[in-house]
Length: 535
View 1: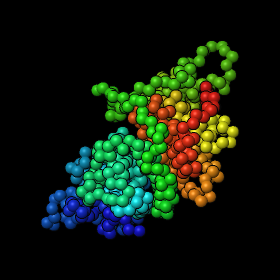
View 2: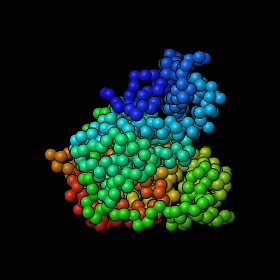
View 3: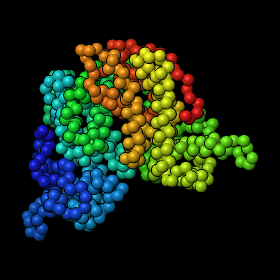
View 4: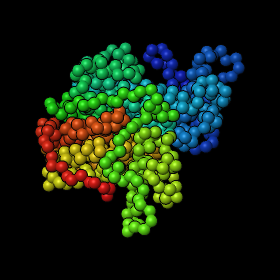
């Protein structure tokens, strides 16, 4: 399958772009995954001639940057970001350490430059394909085929863009979010400005690919507001499906999923039905100078939930009739609450065992009896948050006496109410997971699959003439997750319950159709009793 931007040149060599400037061709799947310096690696990292070669110095620097970016992608895929050293990069890329530091300040700067290169080329590939002639559905399919082909050809590079690098820091996560937002805004602007049957000029396409600011929002005008959530859900679902295949080493399967994903996306109207698109009551809180942590992360001041406040404080010492099981449960609950609060406020870099123990009012010995490391405490808090969210959602779902559409509506509303009531756990579970570890992502994926399972009965409600694609539950869960991620990260947790009508519609429309989904989304459901304590 031909992919825009692909080249037959060895990775790291300059390729001519349409505007005459050179761009870096990032690598396809490495030939060799482990140590050594075999022929595959020698070919990819071949140095330019030395001494009197007559090459433009900028061409030499461009080649060196390309080899370093290629090496970084390969080593991150092999070892993880934290384990990659400058020595490893310079050795693999065949670049000296002085040359490295003449090109980049540190590893983080190299990562951000590499990420920007991948994101720019991916955005160009998608937007050039999307802005061709044809209906909205045809353009969407063309864009998705281009993206799937790129991901299949270069899984490690696209994985770096879609997932980021664990432990790369807040700048990397901010860059990832900015890239996704720019892509969403470009598609909104294109849908609003051109309609279904026309494309934009090459100049406009280049501008869309380069943008990192909300220009798309301005171009789309008032009409963009109604499309915001729909576009975010569709791109979020595609991203989740893509990321899952990349993590499992199934990138080659992505082109075969294009028609299913496109059919799912086309089940949504261009605009949400009237009464479902409810704007937030409050925008992102404005910060004042000094409200950042040492690593540059915004310092959050999330109010403790009512349940967490009830659990605070050390149990009374001396003689008491409390059972050991209750004591251990209370201590564990305080630890996971403290962990969630610290991560929400300070980020993973600010999470330390002394700080956890101090906030939880437990001794260091008690902490180590329950969790070997602070990372284990993070995973424990993540599991608790997901378990509670799923339990409360299922209770609301099952209270609807077998009426599946109303059960889904009740479950979605209960989930949103729970997240709003537990802001620290919502932040850790939905947002901070991306910076944690591959194991945290696996736990998150398990939770998403559990939520998606409750959408499976929808196939029995769909008409025989219009059966939803098999990918629909997974894509819906991923799309909803992306919307929640956006709201929580922007400190609009208290607004999440206002999203209920729109997200109920998103969950139901592919199965029962937009009209019936909107009718159910506008109804009030019978809420299940909220759980006062953890199960």
